[in-house]
Length: 509
Image (tube, rainbow, N blue to C red; front, side, top):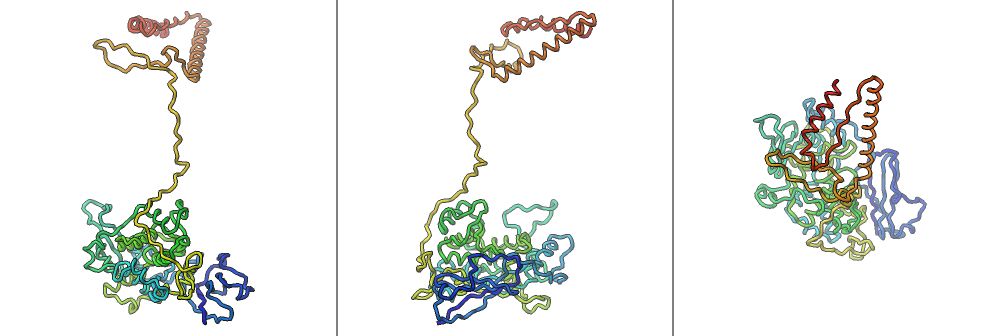
């Protein structure tokens, strides 16, 4: 009986790369000590080779056959040397967005797409279940099937550098009055500028047939799902307390169903592709996975266009994906990439997620009936149907955002003083109610202290002025009369005015 060990051959990485401790073991261990556990040995000899010996798949005395599997480089790898400088397809006018994007994108790595290995699905007896989610000749089937198409670096960099997307129905800024409305999708491919509607883009990239554009398969496709719904869906497939609300993502290893993890890996190398972070499930991944598993119509062309439009935002050490669909678009215009003399770099071939990938993901195990998906306890995985309905999950409230509820302020002045009716014919002005006039009411201590302070200052100023006038031989300033109570204010208003005028004349003298 010959057992297969997976060998991942990777490109050169930085010597600063840290090897996961769970994948490093003592090389002096014997074969007998490797029963029912996983061995990963990282060897750095110019290239990194990782050996996986799957549990219950290695028996004493068995021969071991090693098969190389090409895989993308690890983290911390430096960007490749810019070999596309001066390429005729990558010459854009100076100062344009396309030129700035191209300068960055041509130094990025290009990733290899992964497609479904239907032979592997048949071997582990999962084909009927996969077909429930991915029917034959459906947009999802075409998305994963077209991923098995070569990628051409020059075409991909040119396409993403010049790609613009204006979703239909959304407002678009117009540079000047009367300017033509920009196209929904525009890009340059093989040196030719092209523009089209999103529906035409959906057909040319191979996701939809022309006759499907007028049906609900395309018109009713979801563009977005509320985040509480997506987090609630995550709790259905991964359990509670496994979603990091601060980072808006969760670890795929918490997803219980191995098939869901397999499908997520396909999504993370196609329509929501990225570099090394496929161990995380983002909200974008969760949106596509939700539509796939619950068989909701999904706007795949819209999602692919958004991915291309945001490609230049990725880190320079990241990866570019989507080249398989760019090749399909090029072929729809009659181009034959492998016969184009301007394409200098060799085509990047896709891979299939077959048995070796499943062993590497540690989601299958060999049973008497053959290899099957395994559960956390090591037994054969039993499918758990998804509930038709689930509750939305909202992020927990931030304690810093909680506003404390304060008691209402106490009324220190007592009830309001009733105001006398205004005289007939007098202009109606708002009356200023002086606090503290209600029977038994008391001024606030701070207000009382402030009033006492002001009274002291006024008295000090009056005494100082009187002393000065006495030293200079001037008569003293006549003090103003004591104010009458509020009830006599109207009667004494005129005499008070004369008194104030006399005082003012004395001060002027």
